[in-house]
Length: 102
Image (cartoon, rainbow, N blue to C red; front, side, top):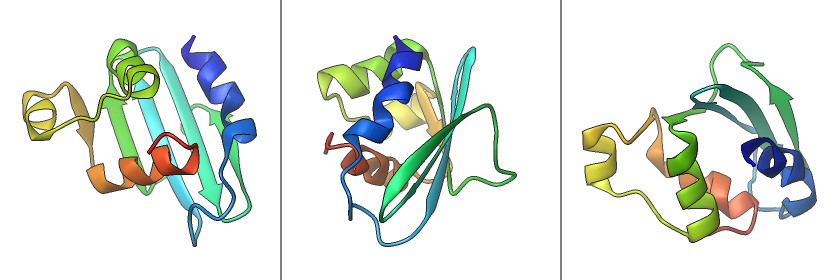
C-alpha cells in the first residue's frame, strides 16, 4: 500500500506547486523513500538518496496512511508525543500541496 502511494506520486504531481527544488526523506518503519520535487516534476527513489534532505519525516506506516488517505493533519500533540517526527513540519504541508492533498 505505502509503496503504491510513492509509485503513484509522479502522476499526482501538481506542476508549479513549489518554486524551488525540495527534497523529502521518509522513514516509515521498513519503508524508506526519498522524494524530490521541483517546479516541473518529482522523482521518487528507494532509500536515502540525499545526505541532508530538506525535510525528514519519521512515522509509522499507519500514521502516514491516516494523513494520506483520511486527510488527517498532525497537530502539535502528534509531534510532542512522537507519533510523527520531522525537522521541518511546515515542509510536510508543502509535500501534501505538491500532490493535491492540501
